[in-house]
Length: 150
Image (cartoon, rainbow, N blue to C red; front, side, top):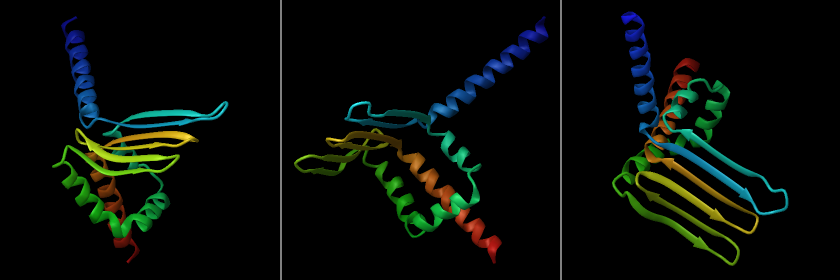
């Protein structure tokens, strides 16, 4: 009986640590609401720590395409994500015209993108650390692929 209690305690502790680690970096939230009859309403909430792990399983051609498109900008993206952590609440972009309003800002270590238009409302929230991890994964994939293709 004591052995079962120890096994149960070990499993519970492992689950608690894994949950804590997964939620440590926060959540990535994407919300899209279409303003039309029978419009789509998409809301996705993903633990930020899972994204770099999931990228390890992405098809190589998808990582190559991402590296091709973002390659020249990867060092800049990594540096910006790192530096924006020094400014926890900063408004980066605020554009408004007759029909649309776009705001990009940081708040509590997250990059927030809000778009309001007559057709749809889009909200994206992503921890800045996750942006750094994603760009690092793409850069690493690019470097590995370049080394293996030589």
